Image (cartoon, rainbow, N blue to C red; front, top):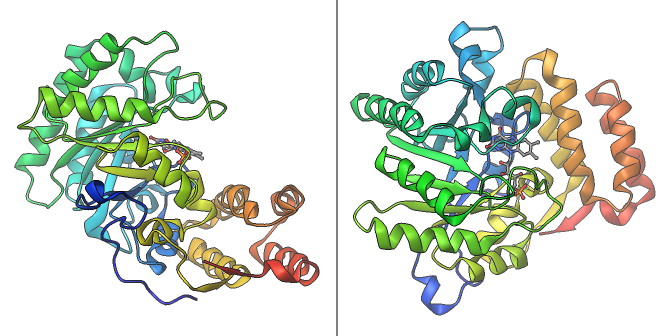
Length: 353
Ligand SMILES: Cc1cc2nc3c(=O)[nH]c(=O)nc-3n(C[C@H](O)[C@H](O)[C@H](O)COP(=O)(O)O)c2cc1C
């Protein structure tokens, strides 16, 4: 494995002089089935990131205390940088679950108001919160904020991750939602600047991240709202483009490409090649071993399949490999598939970071 890089501090060389003075945070996105401890360990081996959002935790399931819940609340390897994302259809379980995750420590609690997946949205969770009565949502957020402030742990910050709204969203509607968040105590807003129906086909609109930064700075100068942009950052160049479009953003959140390349945080932070070699087979072996340590046996297959959807994009014949991995029965078989592939594609085993 690679040596551990010193902790990320600033995205320096990719920024212009003015922006260089500002610390840009790098955050791991919440991703169901992916943002678990095994992925965080992988990122940590390259130096870590500033905040690790966990995969969304279904509040009612956490309260019911099912057998798998303990895996959702694992907090390694940097427990002080955890952000606990909660989701549900109504306020009551979310408020109660906030008390539980608050005791786990970390940076704070995030409420998922951006997930557009039909099975989540249809039931009134995720992005459905953007369309609910604002005063009701505000009441929920205020209660959570009180829990965080009165709790004894370090977990104090309330954040929300959201999208732009429906396809016919207006600035007026979007910013009334933002006003509600700020007046309810939300201190960090992560914007994935797409509408509900836009999946990944159209580019994320980073100009809206900048608009949000300007709005918050002007209207709420005292509140110091941290605005994080998210969407389509896949390498140093796209990180640079995102920050050129949204120079006032406080951070960049990475999702899919952090799974494909957990070393991406280090590359963006350093703003250049890392001058390191990485063995993609060894990396994979370690990752699967971490999955076995950090996930219940019942999840090994699905969690690993999901990982390979992204990790295989590091190879020329990605689709061929993805399909083989999908049908493999065990980690041993998956490693054998990768080994055989790399015996043929010898120049793809070691990459320069
Ligand atoms: C497999 C998968 C699961 C996701 N799960 C969540 C989730 O649990 N909560 C959430 O707020 N967003 C979730 N998202 C959305 C991501 O956090 C992120 O907003 C989106 O992928 C855009 O970022 P990217 O272009 O860096 O991938 C998920 C995305 C993917 C691909």
